[in-house]
Amino acid sequence: MLAANGVERVELEQPREALERAGAQTEVLSIHDGEIRARENDVDAAGTFTVDGLVADASVTHYDALLLPGGTVNPDHFRVDPDAVSFVREFVESGKPDAAICHGPWTLIEAGVVEG
Image: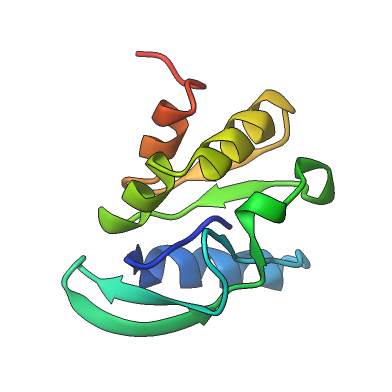
């Protein structure tokens, strides 16, 4: 999962829980370490999530799937981060499954991996 400050809590938390119930191991990658601040409806503070690793240090080969949660603020952080854009582009080009929620596709668009 690629998430930063401003991630919509429900768009990270519920898919993560579903993946873990299905047996997947999940990690939150971000552009800075520590914790990220979640939001509800892009406005209200909604707690934090621990960052498991930095996207700048991540390798596509270590992951089986990619989830891009939304919130309007979250993908804005990634669209302007060259490491995040490169990681997303490489991930999609690898042919592995990827999913994006709400405004998450903005990063796919910035990476040049979607058309139309």
